[in-house]
Length: 139
Image (cartoon, rainbow, N blue to C red; front, side):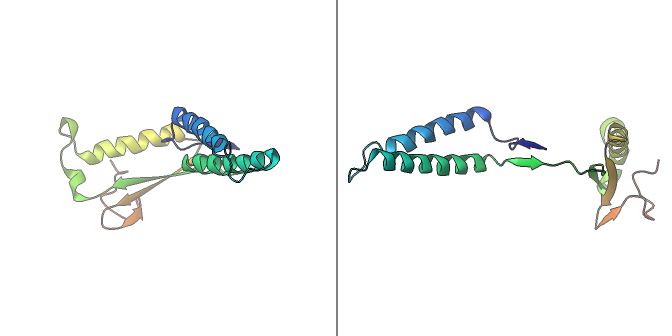
């Protein structure tokens, strides 16, 4: 099991926000009107710290990953099969040739580690090679 934050969550800003919210929560109960006993002020400050930090860390979008026992991860690759893929790309070759090479490279890289499913889309989504003549997996 692993826990990590969203790729968009900056560790620096998260740490800075944590320190700022901690200081704010402690400062907010420094001057309590009407005067509160020290224990109550500490309890209220602690609850505010927990609530504010919980919200801040939830904004960082934590992700908990659990590996599935006995199953390989599944990767679904979407391949554009529209007519625009017949247009020339880099080096004059059709864009579909570049897409085919990219899919083959990904399949080689993930061989044995993940189940790769290739789905083509144009007007609708369909598995590659399911009776379509323009499949990118065909040379």
